[in-house]
Length: 183
Image (cartoon, rainbow, N blue to C red):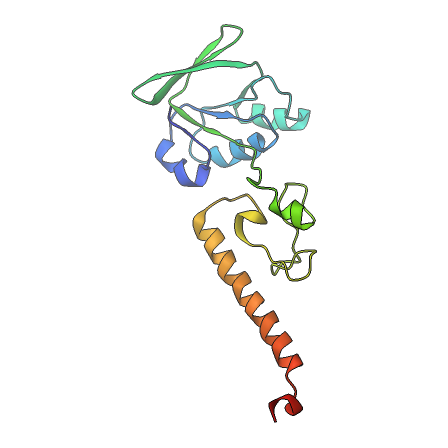
């Protein structure tokens, strides 16, 4: 089905179409606000979860964004393209594409095994320049923050943190080698 998770990657291509956002957590509200710049025909589906506050529901309603909280039974389409969504109560809506807001989680528990402190989103806590709560352990990219999860961001962050590691090691080496060590 023509469902993706990044409004910035695929929002433009789906502009002016009837779209759906499937989200079982509060990030669906944020996604709806972003997607609104490309389509005014949006339905937010929470798949049986009550994740939107009364204020969020009101804001979406004032923009004409429909909210459907019943559980989804199936996505219907042909040739890999979304055409309809059927709900367990028998209700069906037509949509030509949409977005799923996944819950990002770390794929391994190595940070916990090392004793690193984790953020509320499950990323490794750092002081901003890669240092974790464990001396000598640095973290970058998706290990620190799972959103946005893009190779270019992870590579840039890895490069930045690698420079910090090199600086710290150089500083440590410089401090350890005195004039008497050299002679």
